[in-house]
Length: 159
Image (cartoon, rainbow, N blue to C red; front, side, top):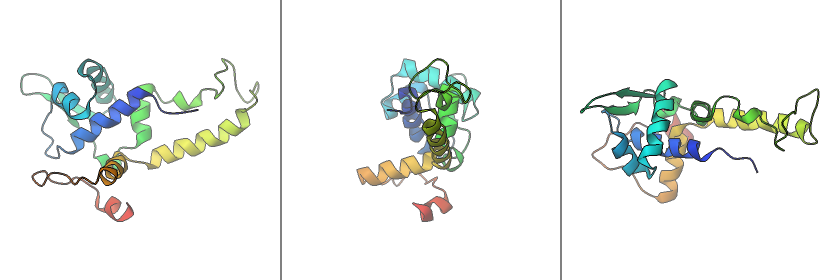
């Protein structure tokens, strides 16, 4: 059924690695790839899209790299999806019909119109910080003590 693309999943993995780097120090694509498990050549393309969307900031050169431009608490999964796959990816017909609209609908158009908005709203409310907290909880791993926590205070009470 419907799911976000592998590219969006890769972007989330990479951004989660950058969240641990709270100092804002640039990290190279190679470092991010090593942390996230995303192939470096593919990650380089994603980083360009994330920089263009102002989710990441970057600095070229030998001491350069990328870092989060926004906090994980203010970065929604919908923001990441829109940066990687475009803002209209959820607008596609669920059945893959080339022409599907309110005027010329497929058999599931009415259902998908309602569910698509529910999905969009849920992705908008789910932040990168939520994803990181969820994965940390599942893995029962706490962040290394030498790294400062970037978690939002309001999210700590919410999660």
